[in-house]
Length: 483
Ligand code: NAD
Image (cartoon, rainbow, N blue to C red; front, top):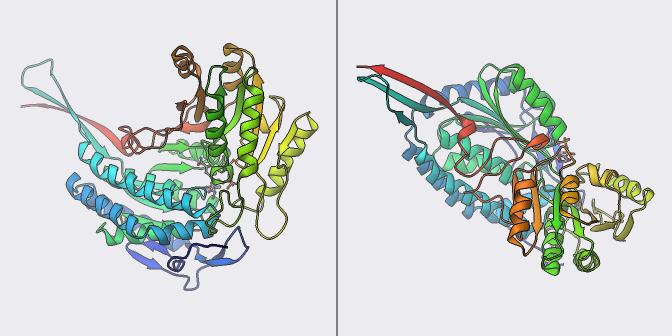
């Protein structure tokens, strides 16, 4: 096996008030490699005192960081972007060891995150208020935009670096401070993220990293009167729970939750291109992507050709350890997802679906599930109604525009969507009709730093990236002054 070698796996720590804290008697958990079952490292959990300490540090740091100039914030973010690029091999290897994705995908994640950091360095210099002409001479009316305060952020394991950096740069760029609980099952990139910001000159206390039992830590942080804003990326049920608690305390939220993205292929599309692109997108990160195309609706005239090409890509993917350079798809990050994948397949099979490719776990060490293609599965099956978050692709037929729109919009999710057509009339009509926060027509073009990323309906609210990126981290203050 031709494997990737790089610096050693980092020592796992908390980061509180600028200090990197190891176990020292704290409870710890193993972090294991899903491709081999080997232990990568031991992660310390924050005690109650640690959480109080982190909150107090964030509150204290906010008093000065909120007064920092955009130029100063920009310098820190720009320097951090450079350091992420320097440490990319170490970070990428850690991501692969922690959650299994192929090393090349992990590298792309780190480089994309560095770019995101750099873009926020530029954009934070353009947080402006406005002047409103008065009704009465001598009055001056100003709209000021101020940082909201201390933020609590909770980020998941599927893009351990990318999901965390998105929240950190928006908060820090806006002049906020934060306490971030990263993914306990994939922590190494978040530990390095904290080291990089310390090295880039971010003052102690502005960014605090904690670990623990997710429900306990989130409950404690959200209830703290110090915390003014919550940002979460993860599943819909957990997002609703956290938003309900935050709502009862009148705290602002950004919620980036799950999706079950429709991909609609019209009869006039370049069918082979659509099938190749969607199959490659679908199995990226073993399908553990919130914007993964996960319900393929194909016009009946294009169906057979699409299925053939899509199945050929799925069958050709080399599945294995993400550190092996040939690997195109790694393991599932969690053991518990293997029976979930099996139950999706069983349900589809029972309801008349045809398993064309894969359909089962791959025996041996590691948590591998074969890239799977299932056709002719009914719309009310589990696979067509619940987010699979794994390497299973359902492909179904449709006849006309109104029918496919109704079926695509029938679920409570509304994150990403995809359509393929050569007709500009179809393209405009589908982008108007689809209930989603993001629409890709004839390509994949979302999740760029300069474009807003976010969902509607149960997929959440608030945008990360784009000109909207700081909105969730700022409050509006109106000043009227008679001289
Ligand atoms: P899960 O619901 O158990 O956990 C999802 C994430 O939320 C994890 O990172 C977990 O540590 C965290 N979490 C769980 N309970 C929490 C709590 N009370 N407070 C704070 N954080 C909490 O699901 P899972 O099995 O880890 O992942 C599968 C599901 O998660 C998928 O169906 C998918 O919708 C969702 N997910 C979405 C994204 C995304 O990018 N939107 C990322 C990861 C997972």
